[in-house]
Image: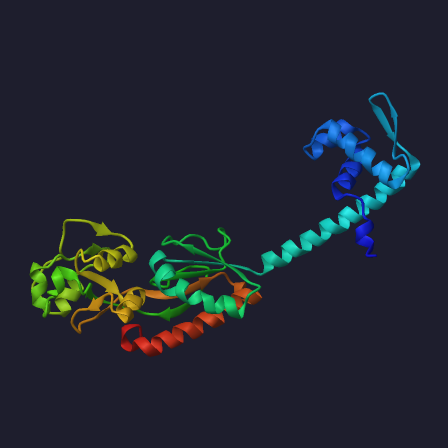
Length: 303
């Protein structure tokens, strides 16, 4: 028979170890959040199973017996071994944890749909994806890798250019009952969705004599612009990287052939030495490969 089958009830062992350490059933009960009666019952059941008294009782006072003292040390050693094992497992889990922070639209529309391939290749890594547009302190916030859309000026960080981006107008095939503008000039009468990405540079590149549109709702995240365009609420000026899925599926149509390069670009940022962690090194290698494949497909739009 397996020796584990002969073990006493583990709750009884825990109650006994606490009672032996305190030599007081009430304090043991407080420590493990049960009643005094529960401790007394567990200890008596353990004594009955072992066939020896573990405590002597004198009214409400208890004293551990010599046999009880020896057995308590054995139980305590076993519990300490278990606690050490738990700590080692937790430490290993933390070593395999990877926290990545990036812009919400990029996280949701470009990175997240691809992460399944990374997890399949690294099933023992727990990846935490945080979406944030803030340039927070990566080290202070416990973030292993940051992906930022900006100028690449992140002091104290290892910085690596991933790719650029371009923006252009899109609309749902259902916009205005399918009556989409056929030339940039026809945008003058259209409802243009507003975001932090200005229309003026694109309008100038398309040779449309219009000023920057104002009024209405201004979306701060590109995902909201895409959602509004999908719902047929207007024509959105979107970045290719975050709209490429809808373009490929045909749920959004790119209007015209004019695209304008974004001044900002996508950068990797991580603290010096972070890439020495196996999970960070693996993620960076995987991400570079995904970006290379995407750039090969997108061409000049993200070059």
